[in-house]
Image (cartoon, rainbow, N blue to C red; front, side, top):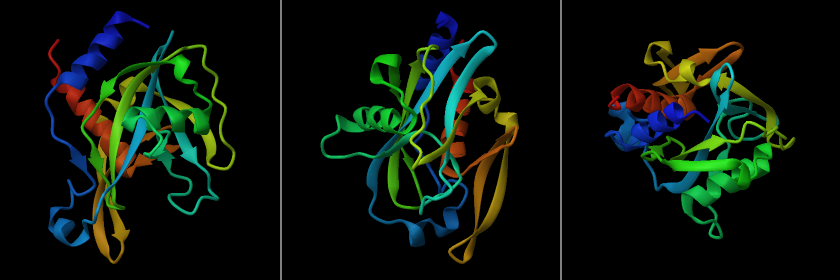
Length: 202
């Protein structure tokens, strides 16, 4: 792992920036939609390749009841037995994509992201051993893939789109790469990281 990448990521973690929310682009409906929040966390696993840094993402199983086929980070609800947000993110990454905690260098956390579905999600930033080989959990994950980190941390690659949800139009961030359409909470957390990296001191 190059010192420059580690330095940039740590600078992004330490940069100022507010928590994010699915309501960021939909302030009119905020007071009507918000509910009690359940804690969750996700792992943002970044690996250094000879071609540059990459980030692991998953395509959720099309058989799942919630968010089938969507692009996501490994993660989920924080269980009582977890060691907080970091413990939950590591557990879920191990379960979903076969990433063992010994293959992870934890860097820190970003401000939580509030979802319209009632979760407050803590993004956990980590570097991954390049020797790691993904092993997907078939019941939850259709695919594990790597996206260029420079692509998803370039703010110009993002657009705002909208669709109807529960009877009203909602806006959301998107970033496309190859055949993958990254949107919603995943795109919003990536966009927040991109903003932080752009604002971090050299």
